[in-house]
Length: 172
Image (cartoon, rainbow, N blue to C red; front, side, top):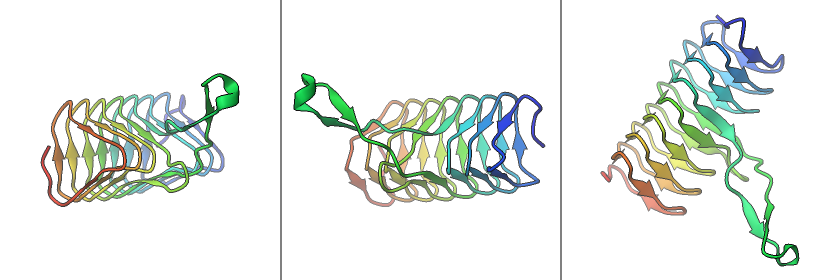
């Protein structure tokens, strides 16, 4: 069920068999699949989707804005924020570690395919695509618009630079 301290928007779709823990926030248009468990303090942003049989551990944020800024010479070098209009789409059987952040896409969606396992303290940037059954250990960072193949492993503390594509099954 849904913990009494959770905030679930009336326009969110939480499957009847899903579990939403204490102090979670599920925003408008979000969809949480069957038998998925959100532990305490999870945030699922607007229009983000989590598939079936998922587990999202405490403090994870799914669907925050990605780091999108365009140079603005008239503003003394300050960047101008680019609106992030994509969503996050998470497949079935995905387990997301505590305090992991998955940014929404800028124009396209950020996608984690079925069976992906990002450990605690993983950062996944906007527009990233992670192939099925890839595992990422703690403190991995994946920069925006990277594509990681299926059945890859990324060791703790490793980085994947933006716009890179990794084939199946690469180990870092």
